Image 1 (tube, rainbow, N blue to C red):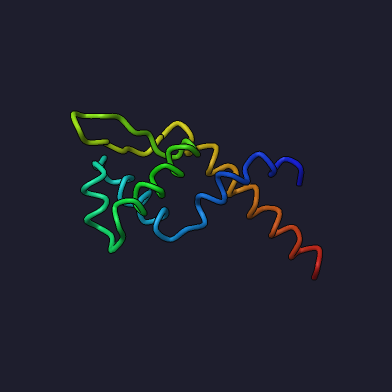
Image 2 (tube, one colour):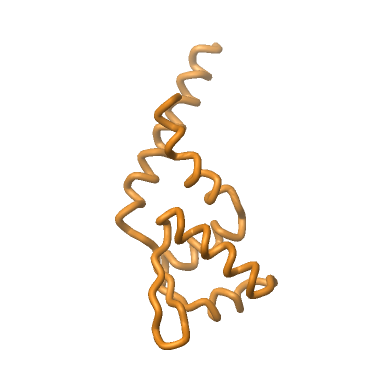
Length: 100
């Protein structure tokens, strides 16, 4: 279980419905902060907070274009995130198997 400690920050970021929705939207296209904000019934500071967490966890990349910030999914990290989730599922399956 020690191997999962380094993954805790990413898992914490992923365990929020708004952030998962943002990731889903960004998986289809890059978007600026205003476009993301319009998709939610949240204040701009709330969306900025979610975006900061996603960027800090390296799940999303940001770049400035004029006065706007454009966000895109960081495709380089997703194979590792997928491997992490697969490893968690494997541990759970093994525990269930052992319990039977």
